[in-house]
Length: 190
Image 1 (cartoon, rainbow, N blue to C red):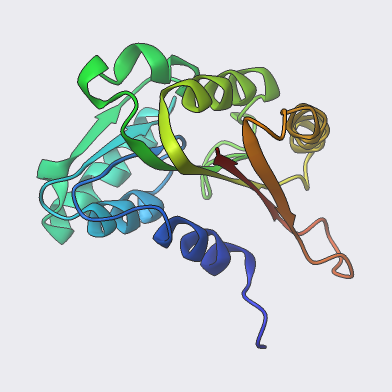
Image 2: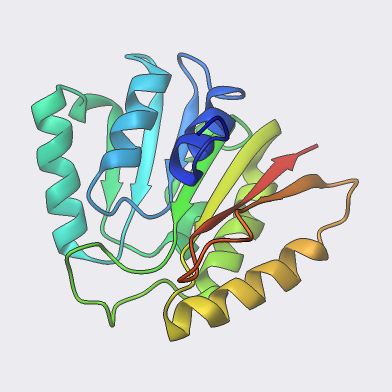
C-alpha cells in the first residue's frame, strides 16, 4: 500500500513542525508509544508533557520510557488532558509545536473508561491558545464504540467551526473500510 495508514500518517504530520529542543504534548499517553515517539523527536533538550486519567497508562508509559532511556525528557501527569493549560508552565506556553491524542480507550484495559468530547475539546482550545504558530494538533479518532461515535460527532462539529484565520483543519480517513476504522483530524495553528 502506497497511502500512509492512519498511525504512520499521524507521525508524519508531527515530524514536520516538531524539531529537536521543542515542547510537545501527548494528550493521551496510553501505553506510551506516542510518548516515546515524541521524546525521540524532541531530543535531549526538548520536553514532552504527557497526560492520562488512568494510573495504568502512566505506569505503562513510565516503564517504556525508562526502558528506552527517555524518561528524563518526559513529564507524565496522572490527570485529564483538559488540565493542559494549568499544568504546562508559563515558560513553555507559546513554544509548543506538536500534540497528539489517541482518543477512545486504553488498549487492553477497561473499555468503559474512555475519552470524552467535552474534555478533548477543552484541551484543543487550550492548546490553540498556548501553541506556537504552525504548531500541529493530531487527533486520532477511534469511533467504533458508543462514546467514540459521540466524541467523533462533537469533535467534527467543533473543528468545522474553527475560524480558518486561527487554524487549518485536515481530515484524513479511509472511506471504504468496514468496522469504523480510526481517522485523523489535524489542526495546524496559524
